[in-house]
Amino acid sequence: MRSSGSPRRGPGNRRKMPLPAGAAGPVLAVVLAAGGSVRMGRPKQLAELDGRPLLAHVLAAVDTAPVDRVVVALGGAADAVLERVDLGRAEPLVVEGWAAGMGHVLASTLAKAGDDWGAVVVLLGDQPLVPGRAVARVVEAWRAGAGPAVTATYGGRPGHPRLFDRHLLPELLRLTGDTGARDLLATHPGRVHRVEVGDLGSDADIDVEADLERVGHLLTTTNRRKP
Image (cartoon, rainbow, N blue to C red; front, side, top):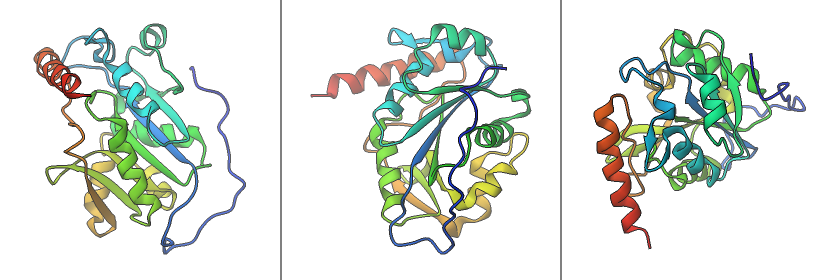
């Protein structure tokens, strides 16, 4: 199994609930890109979009965001992804049993990434239109005291990125199968702060071949509007 190296551990100091009026600490970004692309029939992480692999778009956006460390969780087609995708500053972590589902992948990634962070922000590797500014808006809300969970919304509809204060780590580590972070947030809606980012981009994802053309058109349109 490949990984980015030995897990990093924090000094052991832990903040107590309730959260302070302004949260502090390093921010870890986790990009989930371990799926087997069953619906597409080929590794969608490598599907070409505007001249480069789909996953490269997501990692490039995270690279511009105010996060201190980036880990990309890999599983299906991991060897090909490592060979063909420029990961930038992201550390690859290949998850054993990745086919079990997104919950398993996220819990396994966090268990191996270490706990020296104040918050973790989670993104999906098949959403290339989520910009770094959307990540920044979610992180800024947490640093201003929102939380312990913060979710981006698009026209009021919750989506990614999603941020979790380290106080939620025990619950994240208990995720199994395909029960992901969305289910955890739905269990405790009172702990979730919503941040609208629909004016910055889109959380349109890619599951089948037709999505590549649709999202590619949106990407081209967005690029033309940039100054």
